[in-house]
Length: 405
Image (cartoon, rainbow, N blue to C red):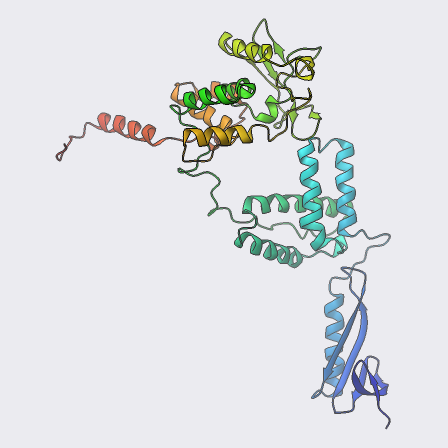
């Protein structure tokens, strides 16, 4: 018998049965090229079985081929891969106006490009399995464990994956949904805000903060004040128009209407983040502060702009415009906590509570749709809890015991 070297193995050139060759040293070699249904690419199945009999070799070859073919499709026509389908879905959502804000567009682009397509891109949509999704989650979990990303961020990626897969299941009329029932990443041990770092100013810290802001950054004072007394997001403050045919402020009645949102670049989304417009009437002292702000706009693009808080070029201010001023004021006041522009909305809820304002009025101004969301943006101070417990103690009629100095 003549032997030949193939696949780095010495074998009989004639197959015993299709895909099985005798091995010079004994046993068999099995080999077959099979199309991977997930990628549409040929996968080589090849193994050396030095101690197997022919029946065992045939059985193992069949098992290996079936393993690759497992989950084969019965679809006809073009089969979209995840990468192409996800990009197409994104483009359709843009065309339909389902994703309007620049921030939303950037979010989708980043998630698809950096977190989903690199893993799922080559898979045919109909061949993605629950195990593939869980394998991706395992990979992301390692990044969370390494503190590279927070579980909240990862859950945003997962949410986009669910949107893409749900659309794929519906449009391709698949009989199963691999994303159904997939759990979110655990956030129970990840705290965005804590007692030590609430990203909120205490009521007695607010006057000091505003005084320093007025002295060091007068150009931002009006915006910060309006944010603190209304709880409006910076993204709602930046696109406010002080004049023009679509002005958002009525200087005679003191009404201000929130109906747009700005996130990125020089384009506003013609709706709010929640999708609900709101109109609020502010007192004269707030109008006076805003008039002072307008009167002090420098000549040129800022004075010529219709915006209430224009940038130096007359357009929308950058989303990060308040970041540096906030850091500087926090350092000057030596506050032992991080305060970002998000603190405007969080501090507002604490200020209204200290002022004894009813929750329904508080939400009508800030735009919070539910009591639960209002609580999420609130930070109950230690002295509030202490005073509350003291009042309850007095009501109980319990006698004071012990000694104190």
